[in-house]
Image (cartoon, rainbow, N blue to C red):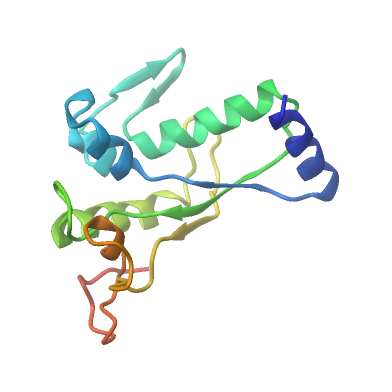
Length: 158
């Protein structure tokens, strides 16, 4: 299929597959499908058991699902880069500065360790540096660490 040629090209050129991973969007689409703590990195224990691998957060589950799918389509040598991840600070259900700070701080602290199936650092980019008031209203405007006037939406440590 389509994924095979893409992965073949990425492997040949030594390029990563870039994936946007947004646990907030998966949770907000159907909040009754999972406890928010699984999306927010705050689950106290294993939520999903996959053979020998236990998952406490949706981020790791999603990263490893990408790796599994890539391996099934000849891309086991291709690395994955999380090109966007974050949590909105407004405009939607449980989209507030407190949850955005929790998610993004846990994400920053977590990505150096890797996932159950892929220990080691995961190159990850936070979305976004600034809130964007020109986007459609709601969560789309509220992913930034800073307001357009350069004030923190919430404090965070890198």
